[in-house]
Amino acid sequence: MLRAVKKTDKTPIFEIRIKNKTMYPEELVKPMRADLATAGFQELYTSEAVEEALKQEGTTLVVVNSVCGCAAANARPGAKLSLQNSKTPDNLVTVFAGVDTEAVDTARNLMVPFPPSSPSMALFKDGELVHMIERHHIEGRPAELIADNLMEAYNEFC
Image 1 (tube, rainbow, N blue to C red):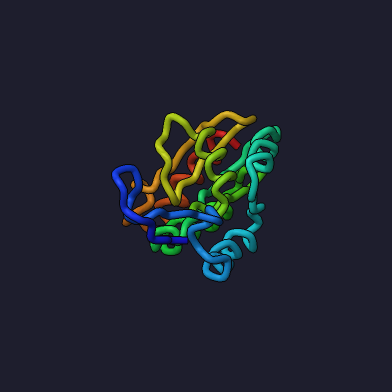
Image 2 (cartoon, rainbow, N blue to C red):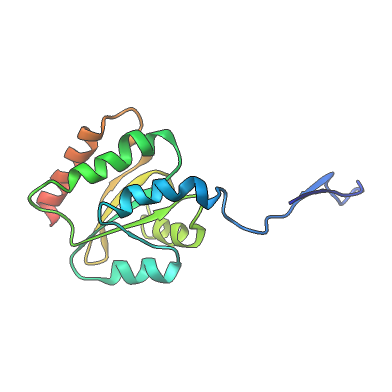
């Protein structure tokens, strides 16, 4: 909510109060969520859910989903295409940037030293980050190239 306040030396002209930390309405992101969910990705909404998912033994692919065009054209199709490989992660999970703030923050903290970016993809093995694809690796690259990158990681770590 944006409200005008009286200007003083200590008060800004406008004060922004965010009631809900979600940047995008659920109606907008629903089909973008479904794109990965129908491919077998479990949606994670909380910090606890992310921590639990990454405690699992084996490999876990985390996709940080996004509303941007490169997520729609490259990241989500690349992630789905990569699942045609003979070796795939044991677990598939996704968080949505700008929507699932708590879950995304927790996932990104586990992706350090890589800076936050969305979309992005991270492969974990037994809770340890072993492979990362950042936004700048996704932008302008075809889904097939992203899938190939993931499949190489699956062949090495899965």
